Structure formats: C-alpha cells, structure tokens
Image (cartoon, rainbow, N blue to C red):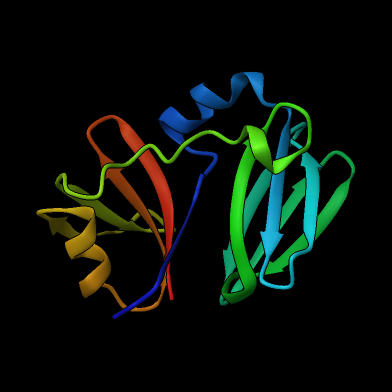
Length: 133
C-alpha cells in the first residue's frame, strides 16, 4: 500500500485560512525543521524537489524526505492548520500543473490508485496538495 504524506498547500481555500499564519514550517525525515516567512512566498515542484522562495531567500526540499509542511502563527509546528480534506468524501485530482487526472469516490481511493508524485486534490471548495510515496 502506498504511504501518503499530506501537507497543506498555499492554494485556494487554504490560503484564506492561512491569513493569520505568518510562517510556514517544513519538517523532514531527519527531524530537521525549517521555518520560512510567507512574505512573497512562491513554491514550485520539479521532479522530486520542492523549491520554496520568499523575501528572505530560497530553500529546496526533497519531496521523499518531507514529512510535513504547515502554517504557523509563531514559527513552531504546534499551531498548524488542520488538513482540510476528508478521507471518505469524493475528490477531483489534478497534476501540479493543473491538468485534471480524474475523479475518485474518496481521497483514500485516489491515494490507492495514484502513482507516486505530487497532486492537487479538490474536495468541494477545499484544495490541498497531496504527495503519494
């Protein structure tokens, strides 16, 4: 069974929820955390890397080593926004470039059928990025 690592994306509804969270905290499999300001934040995925750039500089993360990415009010990982998707509700799946992959009866079903990679998942008005390992 494929292991899934959900992380909050700077997309649609999540961005509205993140308005009061000035930091984005990244945690990797080695236990290292990186805190970045959301000021002028941009993110891009290329191959197996996530490149995050803000007004202070650029950080690159290997997706297979990224455990979580969460908004934070104070730079700690304890004030994160909860995942916005429900595992048992229908979803639409898109590539990170916006191409629709398909529709699935539930997030769980989608994760079971998707190949390893990063996807944008839409459920109603909520959108979240999902990495399938």
